[in-house]
Amino acid sequence: MLKRGRDQGRGRVLAGCALLVGGLLGCHRAVPNAGLRLGSLVESFLPWLGLPVLVLLALALVRRSAVALVALLVPVAAWTFLFGGLWLPAAAAGPRDLVVVQHNVSDENPDPRGTARALAAASPDLIAVQELLPSARPAYEKALAADYPYRAVRGTVGLWSRHPLSGARLVDLKPRAVEASWRRGLRAEVHTPYGVIAAYVAHLPSVRVGAGGLASQWRDESAGLLGAAVAAEERRTVVLLGDLNGTVDDRGLAPLTSRLAVAERGFAFSFPAAAPVARIDQVMARSARVAEIRTLPATGSDHLPVVARVVLR
Image (tube, rainbow, N blue to C red; front, top):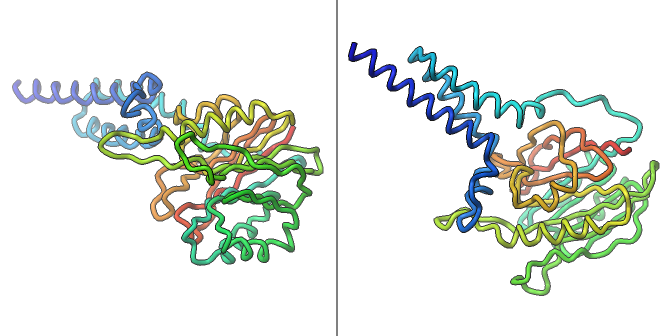
């Protein structure tokens, strides 16, 4: 009798844990973001909450706890609603598709020419890069010149294209506290066979996790500036490629995710390259769909490249 009561108690503990995980998945926007920015921290790793669900499921089966198994329906349903669609196969490629590659090439990359060739091997229409050093730029230009004759570079971000570019200009994403030489955004018009689109390339400030929580103030401020630029864009179709230092679930990127469509299929965890846990390299679009996104093999960077298929309307 004592053992049965103990097992029932453990089953209730498992059920409580399951409901807690389900609550975080379903109500992550309710986690406060003031101060420690715990909300953004939880949202940065939201898909990984599926792992404790699997652990709890195994424990519930071992304990043969019906109450825990029933409670686990809550986080399973919440995770499936949020992320289940990313596993589904994407629709077949169509005639109005653009293939785009996004990569933070790293300012410590020992092989820029090899990296450029690796990006071109995916046969994209557009290649966007960040952390492009002046000393490495000639290697990218030489490696990409044959297939990507059109390019625009502003500061440490660049765009290479199969299609003609025009109207390239700097986009000011500099947080107020950052020195004036900070240049990490550009905008150019791409003259595709299906019409002219506005392409934005951006590198938002890094975030850090420490005892004080998630330090994302500069990233959030820069995201607001980029969101305002996109909102003011006169071209109907916009494609954004960038190292945004945040996942699409992170509320810090709300100025962008509220205005732009994100990838419909694929997880494409891109950072860190050695053991990716999150996709902070993003492709988003307005008046277009990002049908799918996936990673490419590692280069000399600490990020993995991502390649996406954008369906123009």
